[in-house]
Image (cartoon, rainbow, N blue to C red; front, side):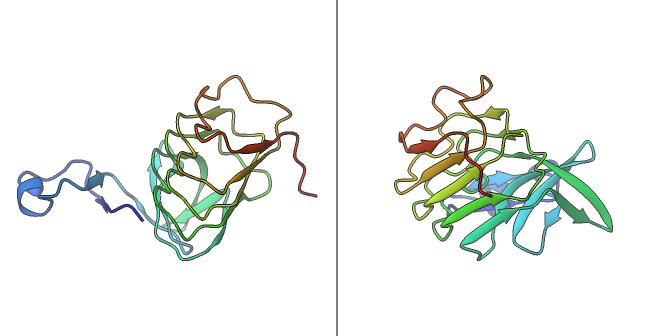
Length: 168
């Protein structure tokens, strides 16, 4: 997995780079917490953004809601590089009635063991290079064709895409 540093602070502390991060590892700020399956998230405008993953599941189901301090927050976004280098993941699905609307640039880059992902129709925006380096992946999309809000280079490795997919 790609090394990242997660901070609750909204800013990188003065002197942090020279003392604690001399290798200039990627730093994610304003992290709110970790859920019980290893998703790392931020809370923004009463919604949850997935910013990383430190779990051990090989078959991951992304939930619709994340609980934080006894409150529930809808998951609406998977952030840039959130699953970067998660080489243990083999499949990703989304909980029924998914409300996530965006998968950001490079969200699943170098998930080299990922063989399948099922993308719900709620995802109307898809960033650039989302699945770069996912060499064994088949993509199952509930949408009947590529939504207009998806970047033209969302699937740069030209992995197989099954449109109009219904898992039931």
